[in-house]
Length: 300
Image (cartoon, rainbow, N blue to C red; front, side, top):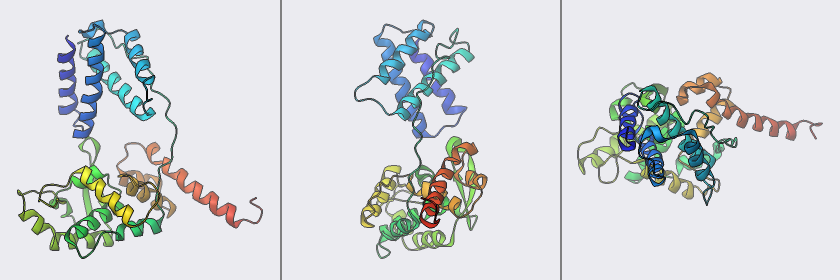
């Protein structure tokens, strides 16, 4: 099969049958589009002409690029390539899977960066409680820290998702839903936003069911949410790096430090495997070690 037709078939498959999020689909299109273009440049226009040697050459060339790609980016690219070839072989579009022996690069194990509780409190208090957009921003930040939601999950929320009272319905990766509690501080901030700010924002644009709206009434984007987080960090004079995932990392770390069971945290975060959640336990162990070294008379 011609490469462009084979790629279209796979993208339809992951869109319809796997229900991936739009930004994940965009990553697939970008990665595989680059792969197909590379194959074309090497005179390959049919899926059966792709060999294991060709796949290995592509992977090696990408790994040797200047500047070198991050291990995570290279791993994602290779995962996209393997997924496509597995699909082609499974569907009988290609005779075999030439990527079967491709092994992803080893990624360095990095601990999530979490803020201290004091830093989180300063971050949450940074938006102005007197300005409409400040009230919205505080509601967003409080919700992120109270629920451990991904930024993409928060901006995808509808107002009706709050109808359950002190719990919230989140839609995670693969459109999987989970229910998480919402603390009193976050609920108060959200109520203030819904009562004092959102009706005005909604009146300036087209009707939208989304919970968080921009200044012109359109649904708040992930990029806008990131700018809100960064502005709050600057206002709070937090020198540590703050990313869109920082409050999620802090949520998990603080729960574990407070004695929460790792499987409960797994459920709250929406992780498919507890192994993903367990990386946060290392952060807590580091904290315990620091306390031990500081407090025990014979620790040093």
